[in-house]
Length: 214
Image (cartoon, rainbow, N blue to C red; front, side, top):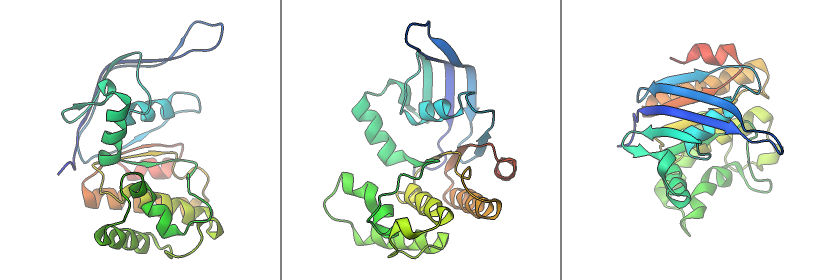
């Protein structure tokens, strides 16, 4: 199993280039390790580079220099198609903007990532999607845009966990939710990752969410 992957970041430097100006350094990380199966909150003010760091961890962006390694895989050195495949097989992503598709049911939104590489959905994966939606408390057949924001975020969490990923990366997953809904989403995300021994890294302004993690 891939569960419990350890993250090592070595000599990482990332800069942001503005037109007509010299690149501005955003991140400079000498060495950083996250043990496999642990849960980490990355906190800091807006503009401090939290989302960029998460994208570097996911291989969605590349550093100007340095290494991002999960287990034995140096993600920062993978070609684009290799990074895409590694993400599909290894990472569950939860975005602040939920990226759900209107006109589809909650169930079809959870199953959507599987449509990118197969024509038909295996019964076992459909059953897993139904079980995840039951766990997060969302009816599978409801059209997703009729759901509350909290329910939509819970659908996004279920989708991220569908393949049983070794890594879950969540960008401000409670930012647009009221306090009680944020608590429910935070508890679900943490508990479900613990149950799967997945490594969870979250960016957040929410001290209540941060306090739940290692």
